[in-house]
Image (cartoon, rainbow, N blue to C red; front, side):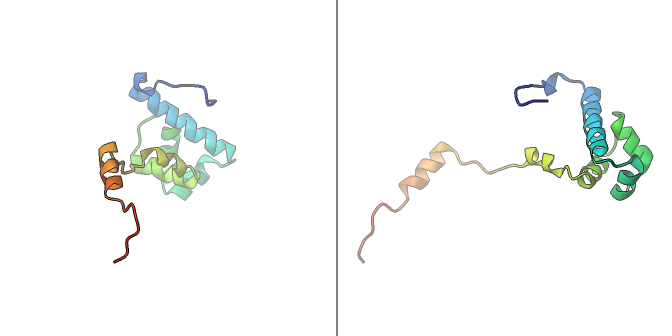
Length: 105
């Protein structure tokens, strides 16, 4: 996928989404030249569980996280990070209360 491509994730079925995740995992496992057995053992799951994941079958979220950790792919979790946002009104209030001048006491 390039930067200009767009996937309409919401229009995909759950099955298609799970298959996409499986292809992603398989692609990165193979690009790192790791066997299913190596990854599964390192992740603490069975090889058949990893095979199910790569084929697009539902597995537990914790198993997916373990596999992502072993393949050094946890950076994708950045999309789930929640950052506190300040509303424009709150920002204006903070700016209003900000000190404007130095005073001699």
